[in-house]
Image (cartoon, rainbow, N blue to C red; front, side, top):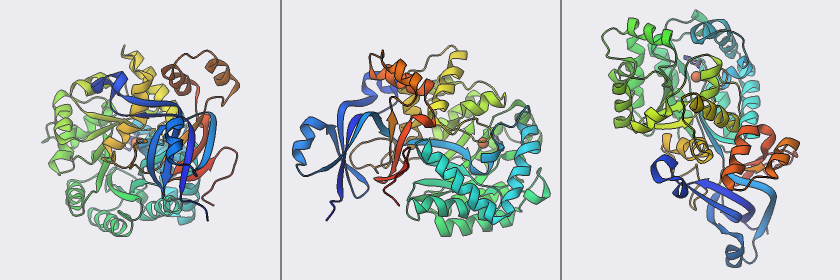
Length: 440
Ligand code: GUN
Ligand code: FE
């Protein structure tokens, strides 16, 4: 009979903490020849292959040569219905929403379209080594059930929610305060904490929700344990002006969400580019997180995220692709863009910091660091096998790297989906570049 304990042998790297807090040397663990032991979907052991193998004499071992094994990437802000909106030319946020995004989202009234896009989207995540994502659906509840059904088939750890939007949007894309509450509740009953799925209450952003809808969102958020709150915050200057006109009685943008009890330790706010000191302090106090979405911020001309200010104010930050405002599903490419955005702010983030942001920080933002984001024993075995010779150029450049730090930097600057050899979820291979998976 096949043993339920399996080993994976190869170079291994995982983050242990934020390099800016614990120092670079304490922020990661690296094994040049490591062994990851997995039992029933969980990581049972991790260490140097030479010493650990003697503890498991009959272990079935998969060998990964010239590869780097890391935790699966965590994308803390992405819109699955915007998969086909990616690379839409020329606009900034509000016009981009009206001209490209809303028409694309209207197509999700068709359940077949939901299912087809969800299949494509989940495949794209796995192909890029992303094992957990915090996902926007559309206003249609069927968009979210289609996504959850596809994610559940591969036993993925995913979080999603139905958009709540009852004003300032086309009539075929609006719900009402009451219907958004009822539909969200129905989805929560059906999917929240089913296998590895969780639900996020998802008002699109303050301008497209009435006070009554935000009030019901806040009520719903506190009716079930461990629900997330997922929305947008302070992305674009015109958006911020609009929010202050719509909610003149509130101190600032975050205060709108706060007023309706939407700022909790399981709240993830996408962007947060133009936050004032008070907003940062409040986010820190609530232990809420910001999803830094660098490819979207440059593509939509939204602005340069201030990572140093967030560190100074002790705000939890993780990374998001923000597809389709973002331009790549690849968290490696997202790490690259984060590096470039910080360069323009005259801050050089280390490859270990970028790697932390794409893995453990995502888990911390989602309050899931006991389950995902690292290779620590006890964690769920969600990991990615990166190919150190994925392209001729990467191969050439890798010939003269001198450290794991440099190797990681080359991967994040030159790597994309081609650098993902295979992706594992709960110990099962769910994507392989050569086409075979063990989950079939
Ligand atoms: N703000 C409100 N909706 C959206 C969206 O779909 N994408 C982005 N990037 N920002 C938003
Ligand atoms: Fe977004």
